[in-house]
Length: 258
Image (cartoon, rainbow, N blue to C red; front, side, top):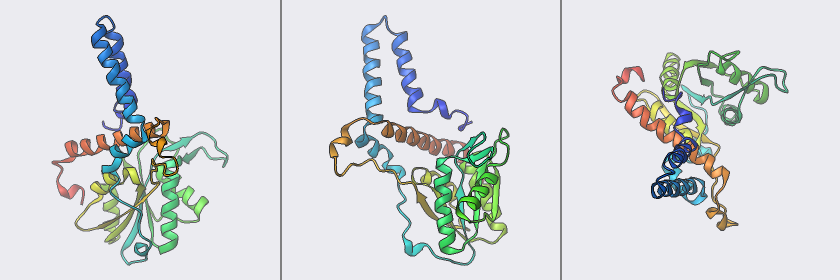
């Protein structure tokens, strides 16, 4: 349900709704003017790097993984979460490929795998409209582009909560006690929340860090930008996801996760 409502739960949808209210209330000029001012203020808030930086701060809990922590340990694995994908014949002559978000995650997972020699578990969602499972695409790209094979594939999930539940079942089957969890920095908090488990230690391994500050040109922090708006849209989705998981899975028995 949450995934299917994603287009409706975004700043763009919110702004469109506000503008629609302005049109519907056009005969009531004062009311329409108030709605219009609110809409423009909201648009400004979601587009200014300085305000968006404050908005996303609670999500950026996990920092760069220190190099001293990247090492081989027994009963340890790397888990990389899938993002989006692209369809249609590409320059590699393939009908399926990963999108930029997933490619960035795979790149860091491959780096960790080469550095440590640990096995990799790829976890992706279910999509019946695809030519192949998303994890198959991820595995192919990992081997083709980075020379790293994927040891296990988890492809029965519909969201991050199910990614965690199904991945942990596989990991326990192979007696894994610790994982490096690879995901984008903005999405890492929600992922760690659902992967936390008393039997498996989770080491957050975030990638694709967001830079909204301009040290050389601080005035740009106060200039609206499309990138800041894009980041605020992604942050909205993360906050909505955190809330939805608390409402949807708060009474789920721990055994279904562990």
